[in-house]
Image 1 (cartoon, helix red, strand yellow):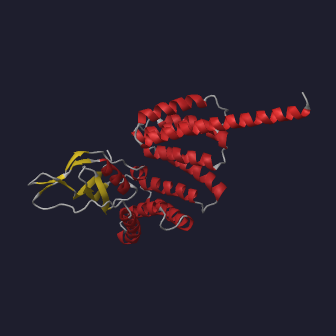
Image 2 (cartoon, helix red, strand yellow):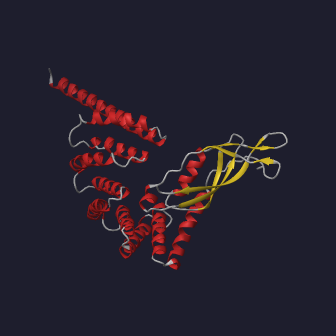
Image 3 (tube, one colour):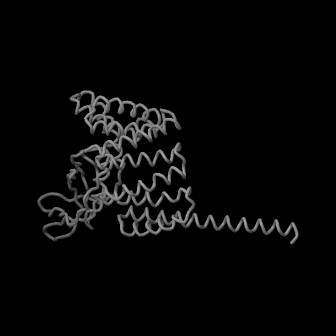
Length: 335
């Protein structure tokens, strides 16, 4: 075979294997994306089947291929979303050495995994383990990114919540102040992460019997929440019926709101008050938060109510369906 033909053949083979590899990568990405879509739709059984197949397939990848970590992490998140807090521990233990080999022990990706593991143990109220993994993530992030990076602020905020849980209030205050300063400078005063730290810090100050110091932090967070609430959907349903001639809308089907991890690790409880319009099909529209709870629970209350189904309000004389407005109090209680 001539040298020119050999070069052409080699080039063709390189193109073939490159295209084949890209097709395999695209198929892998679509598999993982389909599992994530199933989780988002709360089709947990379907998502688990997809991820278990992906996990089995990943066993054939090279030992340093980071794709081996993905189904483990997604399965852990799936079980947490289901409220199963036992199974993820085994998955995280399997993922840890794989991630260390794939990404390296001094990498941002490995630090993110360690932070996730710390968060998991925090949710399990295994505080010593949570602190260990949080600190490992914090150390790597500080060395790689410097002390003013938003990822470092995340680690500091997590440790602050942990120390608050442990009733180490002065230590928690110091960490909240540091996290707040980094987040305000790094991502801005109105960023959702900054608001979360404000809400945590305000709660701590109340526990320390310092309501005057908590008040301005709460006002800043509340202004942000109100602005987000006012930007919610606005569907014109026409005149809203009320008064003695109207039979009120009746709740028929209810979906329980889901806790955020941020609120759960903070042991945050309370209720969100919503104003909601009910259309003639019995669907909730135009949700507005009248009393905020924070730490992501306002949004979870709205998400849940949008899934509720009502029997629409009716006129007493003719029985015609009419749109109406109701107030709903959504309670969040940790069991």
